Image (cartoon, rainbow over all chains, first blue to last red; front, side, top):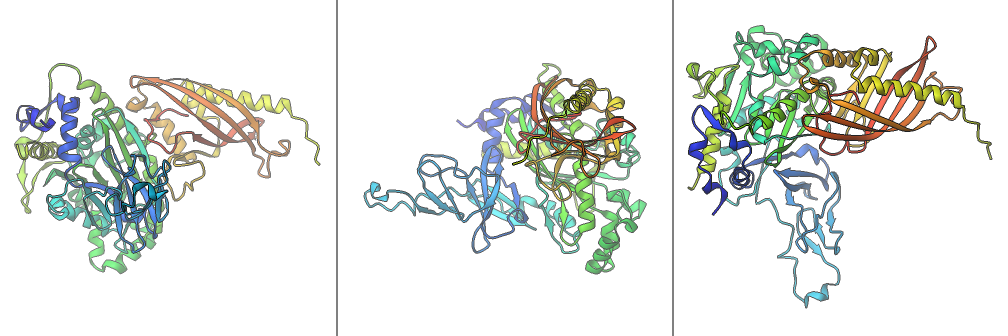
Length: 419
Length: 170
């Protein structure tokens, strides 16, 4: 019997509260691997990380190591990092350039398409040809959107377009901020390890209630206006985009202010080259794009686009998660890119002005959720002021818990699917 | 064949004493005392994914110019810097202190002295005990007769792997 069928989901996940064991129970973790990480679409990497023929990077789907390669024809492949002979790891470098992977154990060699190219002393197999049957395992389904490569370890299921639904529009919004329409994730990744369940991180990403408290220190000493975007008077909204995808939509605040690049904490005169390139690329539409800025969207289960950063959640155990983070770089925007990198590396990662404190909260939460009473986590905030927007999405105020309720509703549907 | 220049023991001891003091101020969370050790153009850098990536195009764990060092210290002094409130209990050992310039009496063309050292830091907090290790390269400068930090580059041995929160001054 699979773990997913033994957990009483309906008793642990209610409309306005969830049970603490969802963050600690090894059976829940096993069920999540089966029903989420090894089934649904999971973000793996970006095509710009393997720009040249034969480039590869080591990525992951949850705890599983995945090699993302670019073959001679330019095609992208997602391969599981396990030799088909004796299960050794065939790739141990974080990235590189090679047309083939040679297993160090017995010298079996695989093309970067996964095909078995050769194996030493082949007469030992009595003339039987192994090449057609013993390639590297592939992630069964792979699709990309604007260069964001997703994989699914299930043979069948919804398409990536169906999975992304209206979250795709947020990726469109991000890409428009490049004068060339290109996102480039080329600045390298920090890996930040926390002793917390992955859902603590996921829920925090679009929790508009915490910034003024968790980030009080940096907002105070840097004289930052970010906190006010998540204040009681903010006109920003929290939104359920469907499919477990959620966002904090800050556009109402930026439209109210009406100044280009305020979303990035700067003004048009500080980035003249970028603004000129945007006007050349987008014409009259440039002003609105520059005012509204970049999305703050959590694409279930692991891709968080945080205005100028990309975070990728990698659960490695029920109580351990690695958060990978990089600065977004836009094609055709060198002056903006430099500033995005410096701002990002100040904010995120193990020593970041923001993320060090978020991570402290994740770990305190993980310890707290093991305290026996009151057992539940409360998701009631903003229930009385939920409303449906013009596109049919549930929204509420900036600090409301619409995103958490949306995530858990989707999560429950995945866990109970096929029951 | 060149003759080895005799080691300037007095200079080495002076430099060591400065580095030990910097380490103690960091361990004990004496943030103002620590910040006062920096020159006005100080750069504090902790690379990621190797020791020699370009910090202007690649992510680092930390890459602070002097104003960002000041911001970091102001944040550490704020009671809502949750990742250091309570402060980590810290003690570190510096070793293998080495004067890196060919002729330290010249102290480099820019007047800065290059020094290397290895370190081990024990960090204890509610999460548990974390051991951090690596090598630091310093550029030190005499300002009004006292040594100051012009640059500190901290090369963690595990900077290419997942790291726990590192909110103290390493």
